[in-house]
Length: 136
Image (cartoon, rainbow, N blue to C red):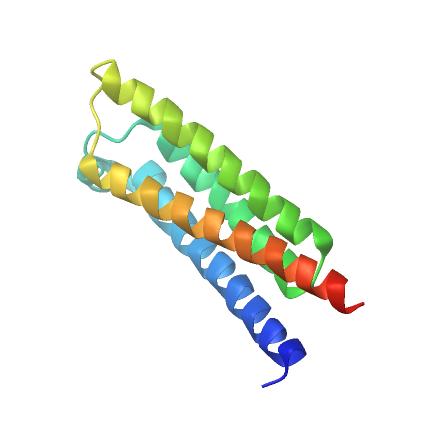
């Protein structure tokens, strides 16, 4: 496989990951926020600012996936901004926990996954952009 072909495949995978992750985030956050009393009870000790951030950021994940798929330079910039925003919310969530606030352990796992996905995408897209710049 040529470097150009593998780069294209990698970008399609990144775009798909971002878009699917976004759709799943919108669905799960929407269920917790708007799914009625049973869904809200199932959310347990969800932290409202984390829940709202995750739900709203799902729409930005999908937008990022579209930008990556269209090979727009802002797709990589958006991935970096999302990685930083997720890290900031994760830090605030940690502060909430340290102050004795109620939380769900699954939120720790979900935020870890979100941070890993978007940091990974941001790093990949940055390296991919540098690789393209070297070839031109």
